[in-house]
Image (cartoon, rainbow, N blue to C red):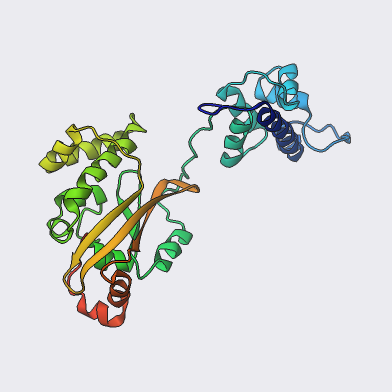
Length: 295
């Protein structure tokens, strides 16, 4: 497996798991489900026979037998995908098969209905109240945010709703963020890492062109070619109602929705931030928040 030094004991365990996993998946699939006639004869064991899996996957019967026996043989992603298809594996099962076979798994599949937001994610960011939280797609478009994000971070329907574009072009965001200069370099470096991981994705190129044209500061930082993984960022915000707020944003990926990133803002033990955020979310604080504030 790439970038991992595997011990003999570890390899033996992995191949044993491969054998048992394939046997269990084969037992689940009936001949009818695989498009085969069952002939009416009773089978000694449930599911498909090894020979049937081999034929349906387009591989040699001996080769598949060796694979299921956990022998140390060479495999390819194409063949594993064929086996996974015949055994009717889901995405998580297919990636597990890759790992057991000693290959790096493919990226998780993105649901076809990516425009639909899972209700669980809405509950998550609403439960994060009174602290700001929002959800972005791969291109930094904000697809969902809670009330605290609107009151504190200035997320509002009349903006572009692209977190990266707004960071550099929204004057309200810029005027309220006391940590803008320090964070700008990090934001650009993290965007470079995200776009470099998907070099053929036109969505990143479109966003890059828009940012380069609309912000000289972005263009200058982009030319420096810094790169950082996504992580935590300290933000200092100057809110007109409560003054200084110190929070830490944490970006987290959702395995079930690899196209989404959840950004949670946690109050730091400075400037009485937690109490101020609680007040802003209270009925009195909501009445006083005449204008949204970005940060």
